[in-house]
Length: 472
Image 1 (cartoon, rainbow, N blue to C red):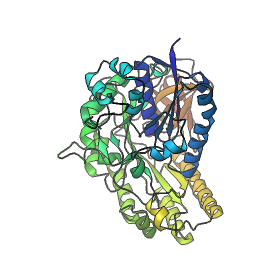
Image 2 (cartoon, rainbow, N blue to C red; image 1 turned 120 degrees about the vertical axis):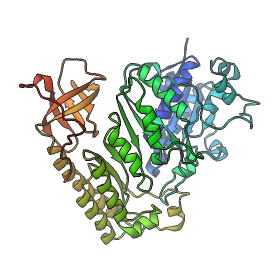
Image 3 (spheres, rainbow, N blue to C red; image 1 turned 30 degrees about the vertical axis):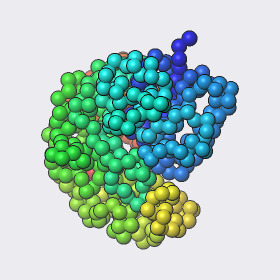
Image 4 (tube, rainbow, N blue to C red; image 1 turned 60 degrees about the vertical axis):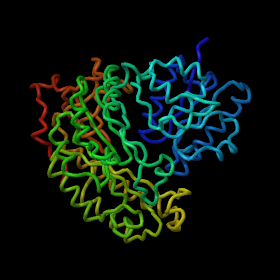
């Protein structure tokens, strides 16, 4: 009987990419995927702790596995991700003694090492064997602590089935905003070598992936931890030349590091999509200072204008935290007014949640009442809906290029270069195809259309040099 694994993933795109790599590594050791944890020989919980609710959910899910371990002592339970962090697991081991392996974020090594030395030797890559080698149940102190560089593959259930994939290029973060736990859980930023990234993307393309999103907590800082290292713009130019790859995105950017060279690269390279995610977090200078963001509201305003000047057809997404410690009504309204003025395509909104270990938790009082946080959240949500409705309405009656990903409830789902969600009814197999679509309906969160070659007279797709008027 074959060995089986089950992976539960929570949180960000980085965790999604990490879980995919763990799955691929387990399959190289002979394991097969199962959707039922009770059938698994190995269970991996890839956790997120960006908010307290996420940590509580992860702990609850972990505790639900305890009866499975009691019934089957041979079951291997691996706790992975930001709940483990990068500083050891002694406290967690005492709290969860039924867990066999604790893995830091983005590192499948401890799990692979635990699954016996003989299985590790079955890996074909000598460099990977060395990095995953174990001595008395522990990795040797001389082992290279960087991430594995063997060419990954997709797990079998995803091969030929997914069109888009996330590819980490920078691990960790060294910026340390006062509200953020990520630097303490994922460690300082570490850029992956260009060759490792290219090999991973080539492997993904060989399995049918058409679009990749390059990931980093501050992705614009790619290469800055390496003396005379490559920049993100340099990396984009290299990735752009990979045959068979159709689209490239990257996230998340930071206002301090999104420079003109990178913006011009986005504008110049056809495969790099005009879609920028650059969080502002707040529109009040005092709140931004307490967040330790390193810029002012005017700095962000000028940046958005610069982005739109260099990439006229760009879509901009941002993040907002409402109810940060000490945020007054007047300060919140400055944030509201900035969003009303700049009209980003997407506003990711979060209510402030105190995270133990952060500067904000240690030095600031969480003094905005929960009901007030919810009121501000709903105000910002309504503004977002109004802005998104206005922007998307400008697509009505136009033709856009759509990369189709999958069929959902009888309709094909895909995205435009600006990352707008589009639905089309068609009996054709559109998976992985880029097709022009004539937009017949728009809403705040999606568009509906028809394949342009089925509209009379036939329609053409606007080029990147003839942008749609997407912003006010």
